[in-house]
Amino acid sequence: AQSVTQPDIHITVSEGASLELRCNYSYGATPYLFWYVQSPGQGLQLLLKYFSGDTLVQGIKGFEAEFKRSQSSFNLRKPSVHWSDAAEYFCAVKGFSGGYNKLIFGAGTRLAVHP
Amino acid sequence: NAGVTQTPKFRVLKTGQSMTLLCAQDMNHEYMYWYRQDPGMGLRLIHYSVGEGTTAKGEVPDGYNVSRLKKQNFLLGLESAAPSQTSVYFCASRSTGTPQETQYFGPGTRLLVL
Image 1 (spheres, each protein chain N blue to C red):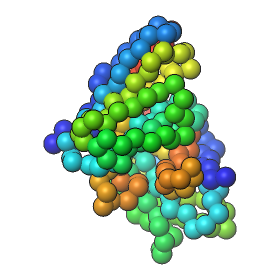
Image 2 (spheres, one colour):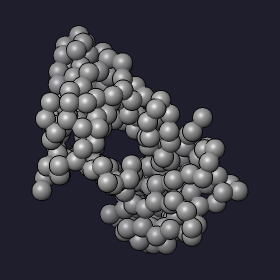
Image 3 (cartoon, one colour):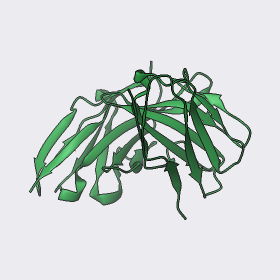
Image 4 (cartoon, rainbow over the protein chains, first blue to last red):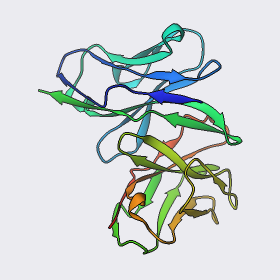
């Protein structure tokens, strides 16, 4: 079955520190992978996506993610976190079941940033 | 462009009451979706629509009905609310020519069923 696991429910970092959010997926074929961010009171916004090619993808707001097939992972990183990055982050994979394409989301990781 | 808007923002219902959540988009998108978001479970698809007059079931459709009478609106109905339907509901839309992941999300409706 297609699934996405985000092992960390809640992460706290200091402003200026580096960040890595973990995402593991289960998918039989080459996955299409995504990271979304949800700021408080807002809907989800697409940060970046991986389809094929270069396994290191750049996104908006200074985020990047690396696809590692051997580890079934697609971890999100940022070299220096800003207070405005405090939000919830969702990893997702594009799946197909029940006769339609769909996005399968992980449970999310809530990021808190200390000044 | 307002994008995707949802009304109401917050609602409290008693068990057995009914209500309709409204989603509106001004981007002329064909596809529209309703998700629910629960702690520790991410977003799960309730129903979706590929165009005016069409609807289809997603992962968790039980207890909900939807209608897409106009292209810009996608209504989610709860005929008899249950505490298990306490959740945050998100609407999203995208155009036919864009891939699945470029969905535009509304700000959400927080629903509490007592």
